[in-house]
Image (cartoon, rainbow, N blue to C red; front, side):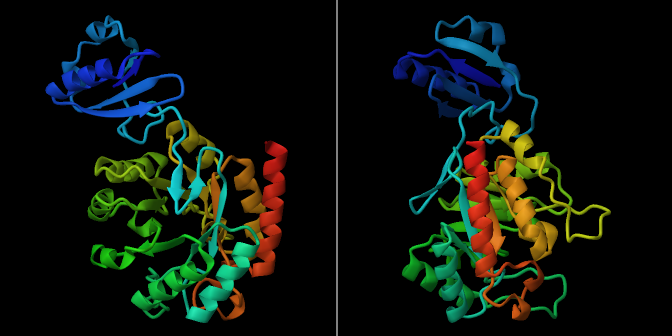
Length: 333
C-alpha cells in the first residue's frame, strides 16, 4: 500500500502517522519527492482501513499495490534513484560507462586498460577476479590477486571499480571494491543477496539467463529489504532459441524496468551478444532505449585474452563506441 502525504505537511505529523502504521505491525518506507512525500507500507495492510486513511487531513491519496516487490517499486518512490559511487552518479539523468576486461590477468594489463578507457570517457573500471565458467578447465580468475591488481589500477587512475562476487566467504576481500556485482548465475542466490543487503556497498545485479523482470526486481528487493538501497540493475541478455548470438539482448527490458522501478538500469551488450562486432549497434540501441549506462568489455589484446576475447572491444573500438553513444544521447536530450 502507498499513502501520498499532502504537500506542506509538517514533519511531526508525518512522524506521528508513521508511528501509527508501525504500531499496527507495518514497515514504512519514506520517499521524499519534489512535490510530495510517499509512504510505502509493507506488511499485512489488510489491517488498515483505506477509507479512514483517506479521511485524514494530511493524506492526498491511497493506493493498494499488488506487485510482490515493494521497496524497489516506482509507486513507492516516484523519483529516480541515483547511485553515487566515489563521486560518480548513475541514474536520474546521469549516464556512465563501465569498462574493462572480463577478467584481470595481470597488474600491467588492467592498468593499461584502465588508463585507455578513462581517456575515452569511462567513469568506472570493471574487472573480474573470480570468474564463473561453464567448464572447470577454463581460466577461473586470479582471485585475491586479481582484486589486488584492480585496486592498484583504482589507486592510480582514481576510477571506482566493479567486480563480481561469487561466494559469501569472499565478502571481506571486497571491502575496497566500490560496486559489488552479482552475476547472472547468482541472481537468485538469496543468502548472498541478504548479506549484501546488510552492507553499505552499491550492488549491481545482473538479470539471470532465464529470469523474468519480476524475478530480477525481487532479487533487488532482497537487498533493499536488508537495508541497502544502493542498487543498480543490469540487462545482459537472456537465453532464447536463437543461436547466432550468445544470448538475446532484451532491450524492451530497459523502458519496462523504468516504468516498474526507480532504480538505475544499465545494459551489458558484451555478454548479451558474445560478438565484438555487435557491441556497438547494441550499445547505441541501449542508449536510445533510455539506459542509465553501459557495461562494456575492453581488452588490450582480445585475440589472446584468457576470458571472453571474442566479445571484447579494443581500446580504440571502445573510444569509437563511446563517442557515438554520446552523440546519440545528445540527439535524444
